[in-house]
Image (tube, rainbow, N blue to C red; front, side, top):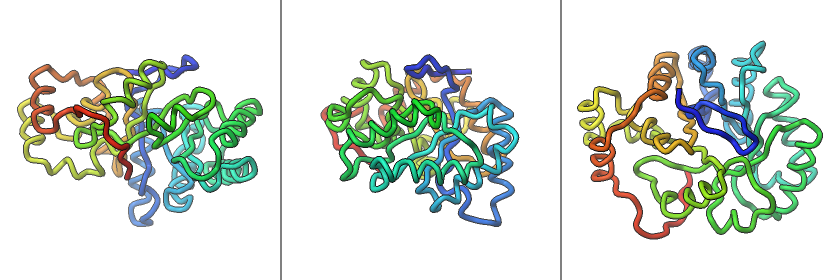
Length: 272
């Protein structure tokens, strides 16, 4: 199983489980819970959520899915930027912990940069680490200039990354690599839109894999990115798991580059 290593030495599988939009539909709830549990069974122990997702419904669903299995999970959530001052961060964390049914997070992220000074957010993050309420802190959707302003060293920067969103390869990913900070890739399938790309489908077929597996193997190919695709059914989870052992040949990578060229100049950080 392909893994990545966090700055504190924690080794994790290079593919986790995203939960954006999970919990929004009561009709899909059982399948979504089953998908998360199937992921844990298969070793996809990183589960990423946020207070923003469904106004807490995602966290509630995750809490149900991991009930009785908390120690198996590397649990990640995020604080909204307008909540990220000293008092707001604590209140947001307490609410997330209640919804998740746990007493701690393994990783807590600032969802994106807002008007609260980064120093204030990092100060409370460090206090929460000292108190054992979170294991590590990190950020999401911060670009190179934002990271330069950030006091301290985050455990990760979670960013939008897939073949159609490669701007981070020019400067942000090299910056993180130089500091030995892994990136987390959200929407590695571009919210499933890339699954309809005919050229990617042909590349995947020639390689004997599905398009989703191609995209996930591409995202984690360098050993310093953790991808967090969403799976809404156990079958989708099994498809994602198979990508952990997939090595893409030079010809496959070249074909993807031809369809989606790497950036040649700095580009603004993209977000969804």
